[in-house]
Every structure is written in structure tokens, then in C-alpha cells.
Amino acid sequence: MIERKIVDEKLQEYMVQQFIGETLSRVGYSHTQVQKTPVGEKILIHASRPGLIVGSKGANIKKLTKVLKTKFKFDNPIIEIAEVSDIDTNPQLVAENIASQLEKFGPQRFKAIGYQAMERAIKGGALGIEILISGKLPSARAKTWRFYLGYLKKCGDIAVEGVKRSYTQAKLKAGVIGVQVKILPKDVVLPDRIHLYSQMQDVSKAVKHTGNAIEVGAEANAADATPVAAPTNMKTVAADKAAHDAAEAKEAKDAKAKKPKAPRTKKPKTDAAAPAATDATTPAAPQ
Image (cartoon, rainbow, N blue to C red; front, side, top):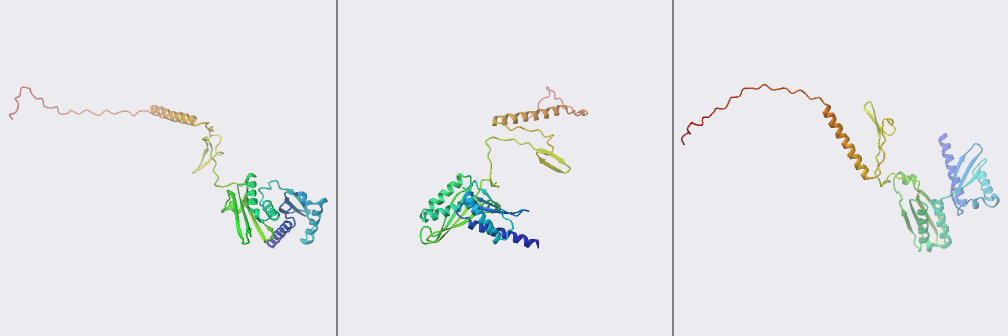
């Protein structure tokens, strides 16, 4: 079945990556990509120091090609080397650097090694980094030390797809030390990021009526839309608003003046009872 074939190919690709990672450890190895081509299998190895992987006159590449043919049954493996530029923000290279320094200087300087790796990653442009060093550091009792700096997502799709992880081991006299590195790269677009502008901007959108629906967008009836330039300061905004209000008031006044007046009908006059006249000579009523 085709599903089983796809699973077998992915499993073989994973085994090739694990084998190359173990073979090229401590020489600046980052990761491997395996691609199927009509000519043969193309294996692209990313590393920070390609010269150490190639070896003298390509001796390491020839040896690795021979092993891939015999162990993984590749017909014509083609190995290419790609140099990694951002070595301070690559989690695999950072983890290998920490492990190699622990093996070189011992477990007593693990704090300085962790802080230096974090500072280099943040200066390299990483948004956040977390380093976990587990083992017998610095005493005989095993524990986990956590170093973190910057912003690092812990849940959601960004934490699964955006955060890069790597794990390696350092073999010391006291035992095996585990090093785990998590880095949030600078090219990850965070959904909760907010941009603040120093000046107010006015955005005009065209509205297109299609039956009962309304389409709002910059491209909907863009020919009829009048673009509005962004104001330069708050005084300009106030002046534009005052001019707009004055124009609306003038239009309303003109519309009211042009409106024909309805004819007024006169009510018929009715003869009201005249008030009784009183004679000044009439004597006053006795009290």
C-alpha cells in the first residue's frame, strides 16, 4: 500500500538523520535534509563549519557515501554541504556548543556558559531562549538548572510550530549531562503583537453594495473611492473635522432653503360675544 511505503520512506529518512547527527557530532552539524531525485538520493547537510565535515580532500564525504550505500541501500547518494549563517540562533549549534564547553571546562562553569549562550542568542536576533541543563551539577545530586531570557511561547500553535528545539548530551566524569535548548526565531509572526504608531492615520475603504450583501475592502469599487491622505499632526485633524462639519451644516441649510413651503390656509373668523360695557355713572353696589 502507498501509506506503508510513505511511512517506510519517512522512517528511513529519520534513521539517516540520526546516523549523520551521531557521526558528525561536535563539528558544527545542524540538521540534514533528504530529497528523492531522478538521479539518486540528494542529502543536504547544514553545518557551521563545512571544512571539518568535508575533510582532507573529501575523505569524510567519501566515507559517509560508502556507509550510506551499504547500510541504507542507497543507489546513488549525492551529499552536499550548506553553511549555516546564524549560528547563535540555531538550537542544535547552541546545544552542541554548551555540551562541548562543559566537556572542556568541567561542570563548575556551567552558569557562565549558559548565560553567555543566552546573551549571544538575543544579540543574534532571537525573540526568546530557554536552556535546560540536567545532571549532577555542580554537586553529586542530580538536578535541573533553567536559564531563560526574552519572550518564549509555551502553548498554542506558535509553541508547537514556531519554537525550535534541540537536545544533546555532554559526557563528563560525574555522568551524562543533558542539554536542551528552545529558541523563538525572529522571523516568527506572533498573533498578539501590537504595533503603536506615533501619528494618527486615516484609512478610507470603499463600500460596494451587491444585492443584500455589502463588501468592504480597498479593492471593492476602488475607482469610486476617494483616497484620504494621512494627516500630519493633530491640528490638521481638527481643522479637517471643522471644515467637514461646516460643509455638512451648509448643505443642510441649502437643502432647507430650497424646500418649497406648504401654503398656509386662513381660518374663518367667528363673531365673538362682545364684553358688556359698564357705565362709569352706575353707582357701586352697596357693601
